[in-house]
Image (cartoon, rainbow, N blue to C red; front, top):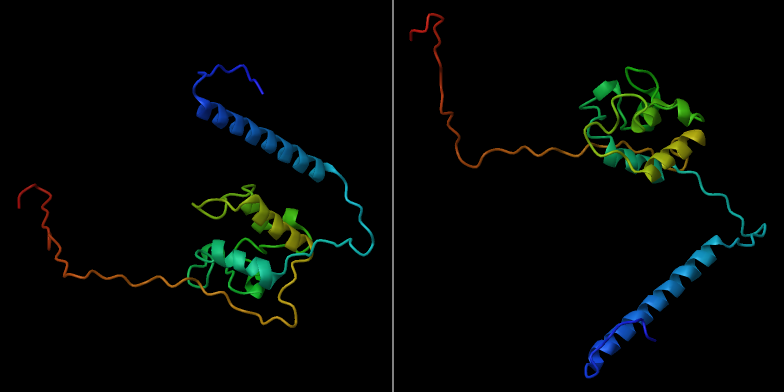
Length: 187
């Protein structure tokens, strides 16, 4: 193949490298177009293979997400906004502004509105927002009725991460022990 490139006649290594690069580009273009074609074609779905996407479960998906993203501020120790998310019952109860979730209505749920920034302050406060897939999972759970732990599942209480008690390894002396101040400027 000649791509209009000029090579020294005695440098066959350069020609081989360019030819290999051209072959790789052709291979990449073939794979990309095949992937696009396969993803755009419709799949024949029979009654046996048709499966509804499973709704998120509280214990399987929702509880771990809340533990990772929300519990630092919404535990029984912190209770910001009066909202505690350690148990399903406390999450449903809500905080000082009322219920955090409205089962079956994610668009009216304060939790979703705050995660999306439609109600201020946006949550998680002073942290990176949840990714769209996490918000979509919470929406799907709420729209499906926001069911709690199944009867067979053990209801677990989320525990916030323990904050270690860090103490200095050497004695610390304050450089100023006391300060006397006189309003007239004399000490």
